[in-house]
Amino acid sequence: MVGSSLTLIFWYLVSALVVDTSSWVTYFAHTSSSVIDEALAEGRVYLPPIVAAELLSGKMNARQRAQFESFLFDLPLCGHDLEHWMRVGRLRAHLFLKGISVSTPDAHVAQCAIDLNADLLSEDHVFFKVAEKTALRLLRV
Image (cartoon, rainbow, N blue to C red):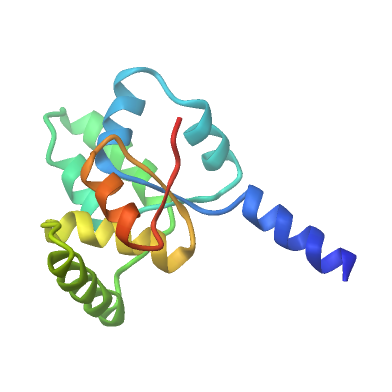
């Protein structure tokens, strides 16, 4: 029993991390974050596909884009199957009934974190509202 309790404590302390576009932008603009750096080194960062699309929408030259795409390819994806997208729709409907309007991209990112039982790192305040009404866990740094 002690071994399984330690495993649960360890899993909680090193759970997966979903990083929203806003936090990636800050990370790359301000030369890193210890939270993201540590999670990257431990292989705990998961990438919602919509975040990849948003990040690659920014202005960069061909060399920068190739380097950035290579970086993103190394991250495991979350939320790319149909069942996930059905949960995204249900999440949006649930939040709408609670008076919270959430875009599909933001609901996708939140659902990725919920599906993985992961922490979400974001600077977008909509996620604070989502966390109040769901199982979403926000990492506050």
